[in-house]
Image 1 (cartoon, helix red, strand yellow):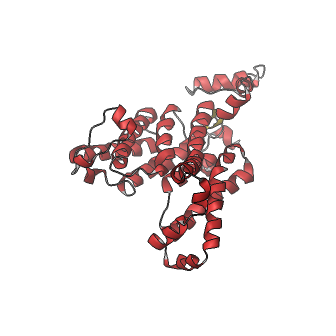
Image 2: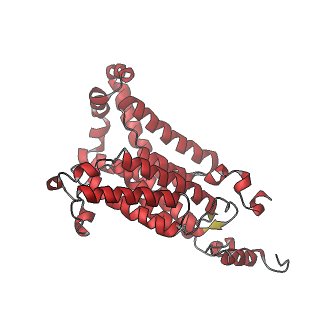
Image 3: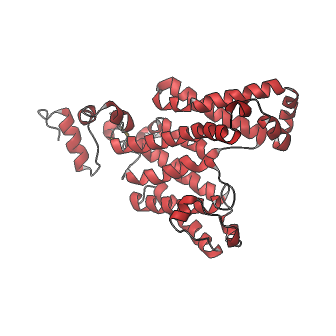
Length: 310
């Protein structure tokens, strides 16, 4: 029963404590400095519940398709070239049986985590097994940076604790922190891409004025995109435009409302075009753009808590 004499902040905190979910009230968040208010915003736990489904279901799709080469790698352990973190952790080459067991753990734990069953345990099992899977798929001569945000999402989600679809009106700073970390990982995927282009070319102008897109279209371009080979000026302009929006991608961390939705739509359309033109999809990063969206709005009203339907 609500006590009319109890301050709203105290009532909110007591309600959260009784439900077993640790949250921060608006007053507590307001007492922090501006950076912490930005870095740990109070966000609905229902947003996490929906995002969790997106991430864990996609992890299953990923290990079965995009990064489904780990079991085959088990037959050639002599070609294993561990990443620096794998070397630091002394992770050995995987065997065929080990890869099969790892795949089973990923699928089972991801299904449990997506369904919200023993959320912390299943979440950590999915994170650790998927992280190991990434070491093995990336440890054979090719490193794909499109998985960075997805791996980080898998590791921060278990830190939130219980998050249910009905928790539309229940906010948590832990939820805000986890989603903010995923957002930062998403934009750094693009920002770091510019830095690597600069480092690899020695001069960013060399990359911008080069024949990168021309080479890509010649090598793997779709038939409809071949006529663009006759427009080198347009392709060079597209390269410079890519550098600019990748460099400016961190702006997404500070936008709200329609401006933020516009940026998310722009990057998703960019990846759609690169897929249609070059067959490069970048789906592990694209799915993580969902961390910027108010996903709790996808929860049907009948599943929301009574106070949220109010």
